[in-house]
Amino acid sequence: MKKLVLSFILLFCSHCFAQQNTEINTVIEQWHKAAADANFDAYFGLMTTDAIFIGTDPTENWNYKDFKAFSKPYFDKGKAWSFSGLKRNIFTKKNTDLAWFDELLDTQMGICRGSGVLQKTAKGWKIKHYVLSIAIPNDNVKEITALKKKFDTDLIQKLQSK
Image 1 (tube, rainbow, N blue to C red):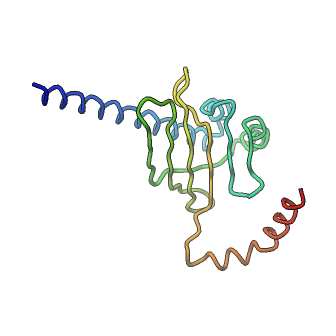
Image 2 (tube, rainbow, N blue to C red):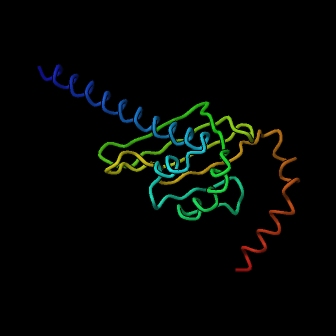
Image 3 (cartoon, rainbow, N blue to C red):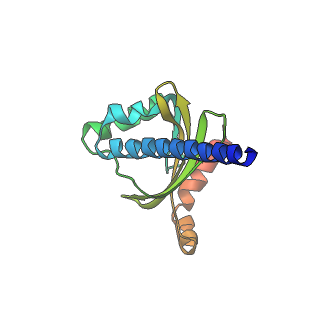
């Protein structure tokens, strides 16, 4: 009998985690679709109001308000950005309202990597923190490093002088 009860509990818990991961995956997909559709309200409605978005440029570390201001002109033109998921890993921990994920994306910049944190709110799962980076094959790192050397040197000097 104990084995039967334990088996039922394990089956039930695995179903709950699978359902939760499906909900989280759906939110991330809706978020990317809202950007592709240039749906400003839907896109930012899927983020917490204290969210952080870190873009591909080293200077792009925005809080929610600043990211909305930066993004608005793109959405207003009807063309924000279009990211399609290629592969995604979602991680959760029992008894918490946080989840985290990493993903490979097909974008207008080629393959990018995204990673983020979601928080479960009274209105469902929302993006709390997101990092987007351009994925560079190891064989191209030397070439890319040379290409951005001046920019990096100038930014390093500026940041170290503060």
